[in-house]
Image (cartoon, one colour):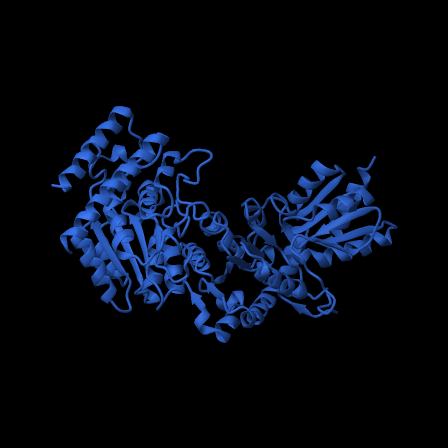
Length: 314
Length: 277
């Protein structure tokens, strides 16, 4: 079995590496450094770490001010508070003036687990995607998370990054993995249906491919880490090849990957489509595997929806 | 303060008022009342206090200013234009589709604007970020509305500024007592400002925000304060300088019609003439 690492760990470790390369990087947190893993940066660079207390709105606008003075602020909280509590500051304080602030949100999605609905943000990609100038990244494993983090540091402008709490398998080889903002990648070729997955749903998507193969169905699997700007060319080319698409995300099916892919396909190449995600509900307390099962974020459900999409082909 | 400097500041402030009103009149939209109450504060900051160079607006070592009460952009733009960041006549295009002079300050469009603002309660936080970055290097000033202090995030910023001992940060509270919905104490009483900021760990000074000698003394005092940010509570009159606008909340966000504009300009011109003795 592959090694499992939570992408928040990847974030915390990746930040320390970036801190050495970029002296302008400063890190802000809202009393959650032990959970978001910015505590590693705090220990490595105490003079470049600012705890803002439980005050996310202020934290984001403080980051904006730091960015106007040439710093590269990474500010962290849980996805719920980074995208929800501080929305106005993110929109008006960071994105409108296109400031070089990275909003790094951990504890995204239902895999927060036992803390339940108030802390399980299922709307953040949708919220952040609607803001002009904002890049939205949702990495799926340790290798992709660190690569996306490096790309975010190099990108001049606002970036929203989404990390998870629960350990997830390492899927990619750090020695060969290539990452570019705005580019998706084909993880496995196929001809009957395209599974477009993001974040922690990559593993389930690859398992769904196997389930479908057992029934003689050939599925292509695409990894979309950059939710915005989305890789339109890759999606259209794959849809042209397979003629049916399923999306998979740990997010409300409204607003996130499923919506972004639907927008591209409806305008570019309408094909039958299904969305796997949380179906416009709030989360609830539970253990991670039970929650994934409860909300249908499974390989079985992806395979089922894939067959539905294929059945709609004329 | 010597009399020449005082006279120049007073004349500049009248001009700031004239240009702020002209911008709002031409646009038939904008916020004259708070622009007029802020005029003397912003004039002193740009013409006597801050180390800035309109020829080098991106100088990394410059002092910074954040208009946290961003709707008072007419006074801000007027001060920047008169200081020489751009031709002040550009204010005649305020709020028009092809203008850089957006309703609220846009740092990407207007030379000299250090931070985009407009959503209340946010500018003071950005100023805290600038002050963190500029510790030991430059000073940071922000102007807040009194009604703006009803925003909870103002007090989040107040906590942070004291916690990080930002003694290079000065917040000027434009205490004109009125907000869009009426008297601030009737809408939602945010006072007493001095006791609140003091309780949050700030050094506080209460002054008449239309008296340049008091503004100067307060800002000089702020420079001597160590390990604490300073809040200067500036008692002002909303609409200051135009008789029918003074202390009338109806002029928070209304533009004068032509006869009203003409009367206002006549009053301000008369004020300017009186200064010349």
